[in-house]
Image (cartoon, rainbow over all chains, first blue to last red; front, side, top):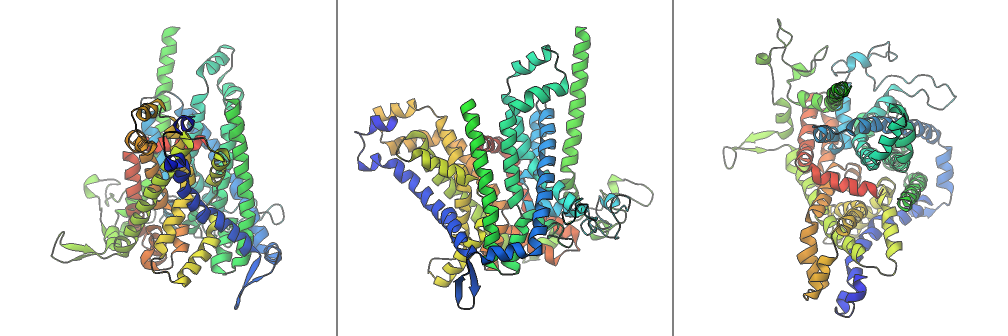
Length: 313
Length: 312
């Protein structure tokens, strides 16, 4: 509208101003996001030979699926994601419920609870590792108690995983996996709490009040008023947690390194270990493509939900 | 009855506060433990059973006058060497402060400045103009917002290898990593910036145009000053994100002298795995700048986060 009325005034430069303003952003995104994306597709169809790259078609994918490590890692990823997403959403929702009252110190609580988000994932991993160092860690009294975890004398991060109930699927998870889930949830909680709190505050208080007058008690208000009204935000939170859980790798580096054995080796860590430890870029690119497909499904889902929300509002 | 309700609300409020204080303490326990370990002596770090405060004496469990605090961990990280000269009488010889933290500071500052500039320009254009492809471009940028760095790393690594082979005179890995960080944190920032510009009334510019301002003048004299807090919050968010990023800095930079602080910490971990007070001190030193920055500017942080979160 504005540009229409101004069109006569400016010269050629001013008329094409939006183009020049957006151009640098587009160039940077082409170089850092679009081109590498296409490059990865190409890499996933190649294998490195002494003479250079040669085309091998779907062979990388086939070899990836044939690896025992891959199937195992999918299992670990599913366990990790379910645990991480459920713990973070439930605890985040409870925190948001508590913070959704007008308290004198609300701002202080939110600030304090937000600190874990500002701490880098690799530092967060170390911080949690220091808690369970064998014998000397603050929590080692609990984590080395043979009542809770099968004893092998050292630490929760080296305790042997229990026998899986369902064949190869790694459930119940290894103690190290449970610990990784807790540490990851700890770091993701602030953002999710704030997101849910913001959504909770947009629920009109008249609706909550009138439902109370109609006789709804505590949890009924949550179940029948808050949850349905916050559903789009909850779905967005779910997708964004799955996305970050699927692609986060820093904490694994400093907390477990994929171990003990392979019990915390999720797909993101497997990508690193195939690509940079085994130096198999073709196969790693095939895995990257699979992760990218999941990422894109999650992103499109998020876009769809937020669009529905916008139209509804 | 009324009296009773007020009493009940009072009681509830008190309970809620107590609960929230407890939650804050539990949530911050890991951080507090690390902070305490970083100030302990080696013999207090390796104690069975572990103690939270190194303040016990043979006769008393806690005696605040007998605390054995020490800076041993920090000394090992910083490795100060006395020079007797200007300006402090010593120099820090530890790699962490000589190499890695300056690198991180360079990457975080440069990429945040670039992100703010580019996001400000693009956000303004998206907010104020309608042009062909407007919707398509915006949706593409919104879609890219969610794309994580991980899956692009292999290709970016290969690009880095090719660029190094080409031996361009102006190129080193610092250029690559800065562009990667800019490209990675730009999409969200464009959206946040657009949101901030949308909140500035158009009448202000209309008035400026009538007074004879060109669009670029209006941007520089009216819009940018009004949008400054928003742009500042984008700067801070990007700064903290780049400061905290590990995997790209670790993999995409070949030379150790260009690697960032998070790599320094990882490297440090492999050398000092048994000296917990040293590791804790390194953690505290690297996390401190971002935590302090956050505590002083939290309002701006939350602004950008909420603006970004609403967009997904």
